Image (tube, rainbow, N blue to C red; front, side, top):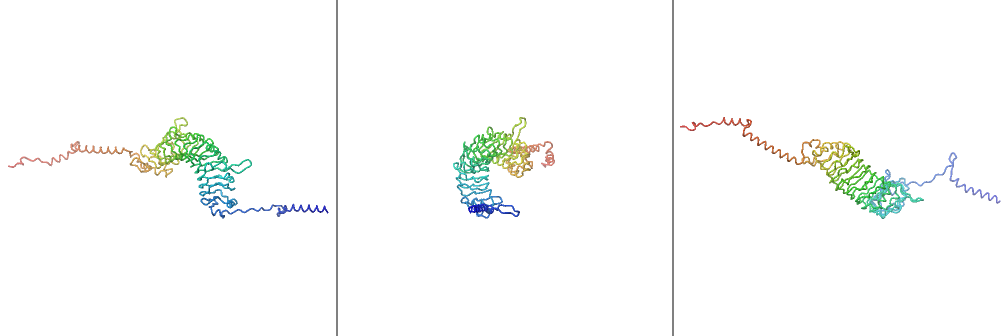
Length: 496
């Protein structure tokens, strides 16, 4: 009996053990075992949700725009809708709201996050660590201070050894905040940063901490430090980010070319606009920047002269912008040339675009560039051009080339002098061949005086010849008068 009891217990146990296995499998028509279907939670139709009623959702461009729509961050329920939605918005705009703090954000596949024009003054440590796909973060136009911006706000997801970096973050905009320096380890969690914008923060000086922070951005390609009240740059600032190819330093207080440019070997684009540099000559010229292709020195209020050799070390320059320098009256004919080979010939950069509009030029040196015909764009508009023989090449030839390549740039190139041509377009002066027949300046006064004097002399000479009868002139009329005159006879005068 005991044996039977043990046997029954064993059988029941096996049935209980095998029951879940049997219930979890089923036979297909050909007799093979297949797993049961897994029940998945259905995706949320995001476009029909409340969040897309409150915000603008653009499925085609994978964009959700909640600018000026939020009083606070998304609620947990709204984040759940986004996380379980049938669309992942890769671009999220939360601009122009009243957000004051950035909390630890939940996991989401956003790539571009715009938080500009808020009132953000604090960021929670690890705020972005769940946004592992993030490539662009815009925190500009907020109230962030140097004290609030600590390295760990950018730390990535947790791993066994340490926190991983935000390895996909390439662009960070911190412009228009209240920063005056950077923590020297600020970018340790974003080692692959390629674009950094710091513009319009009152740094006044790049101190050692800030320079160390920038040196840590070894992958940096674009740096914007414009409108930061800087008077100069540390000479070693470019030792760290050696791949830097674009530097924007507009609107600072440079009155000389910074010595730091001596080490910007790989820089391709440089924007120096709105700095109070007075002239580019002597020892205040550009150093050898062999990779530089684009240079903008526009809107400089004090710039009046570009001297010999000022740009001669920029032998790969293809685009030069000198527009809107209202005091700039002179650019030397040797400003760009360099004797590279040591022979009799000079070398010039391969310029393709040259902008000289809205300056104070009167004459354009013919030898400034050798191959003017290689220019794709030449802007000479809104200068007080002198339309006489001293500017013959520009008036008679160069303007024709401009008119053929870019007609819109040939208009509003106006003669200021001489007075007789004032207000005429240079293109019309050239077409009508007026340059060779019209003298310049005060020579008109002298010509007028000479003409008057000659007229007086001719008139007086004519009168003199007329009266004296030289060369038979006047004799015929005198004979006629005598023939008509008959002397009175004395005999006829007195009759007895």
